[in-house]
Image (cartoon, rainbow over all chains, first blue to last red; front, side, top):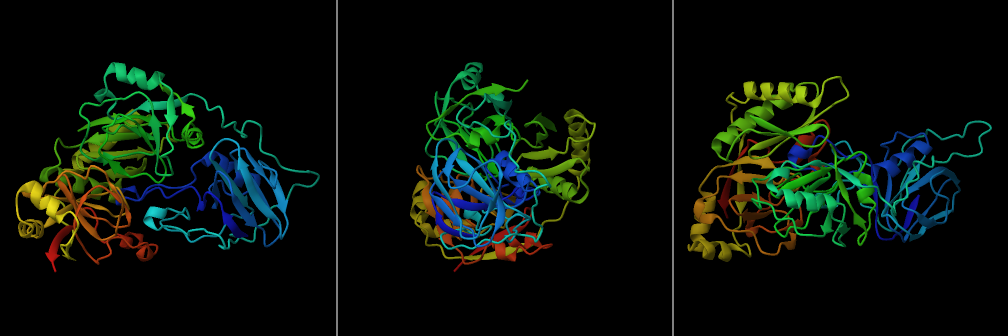
Length: 283
Length: 217
């Protein structure tokens, strides 16, 4: 496969690189592991196999050989059908014309993509120069000779309706109390749980910024301590920042909450700047 | 030692009250024990100055509270041990950074004094964080403490030697940054090309517990 146009962003991702945070290396990996694992499972790949993460729209990739592929994630106008195994032919161009809601889409190939692993993962992490940077002209190969076959008598394979998420209407996002939950006043904790939080345009794979009522913490800074993926940190301006997959491993801002990583963080990742989310405490 | 739940399967252990020498040695002993013989249910640990994150595999029958209690016992037993310091790295620095004057002015000393105070101590690597291999070094001379910049720079070059508040460190990769840049080094603090399995830790020149001295060139 060849990248013709990287659009608003394409990168190789997989499950990420746990185990290296004490050296300052973030976990990385697919922003929406739910959609990514769906794409892989449609092709009988390991759910954490390397695939291509596509941001919003504008990307175009050309098939250089026949291969089964699967595209899952944000609802997009695309040259191929989504949320299903698709037999692409050499010369065919996968083109993401428009992304109607959500942020991230995932393109898997049978056998997974081949990419050099760093610290056990092929995930691209720009700031640390880890992984392979994709741009127009980049060539991508399949990882193994294992081919995907539809079972005899089956006409297609489609992701279940439950797996095909409607990213335009996220559920209430479930959070755990953060380590500094008690450094916020009861009124501010209540505000955090009842307010509508708008995703700021200054959001990326490192962190999603939220806009809403001001949440002053006392004290406003702490001695730098480890930060988990999905932590809701509150810097001095009182506007929360959610630590995403390429976010720093330690930090000195109080953490009011932690978003449930497995079930709820993928929903947050797919929320767009301007859209709002609301929180609910896990009890 | 106190602990707090931090999500479904993790705890944050508070092992010291302030980020001092005592905390450093305790953290080092705990980290060494965890990397050599951690309880099987510990998936990953991340040290801070006075806290340590411990993540557990909860697929067994035991609830988080039980695993946390066992781990605290483990850390209290091993945290008292004396662990030798890591190797000393001498790092040549050209002290010509854009914020050298700012650090001097803030502390009411000359730029020559800044260099003298910065090169005098043998620093300890308390932890790595912020970016791959970024060392948080201590202790910084009290006449060098300087607040971070009001607006972080969008790009600080790899090799920049900088002061942020009470800390000093070296930027391992190009990244945004708000610390005061006082100099630069050609030494590669982080090089992913050195990360060849099974010696992937070689990507990081400085490891927690190592010692660092800067040499003015």
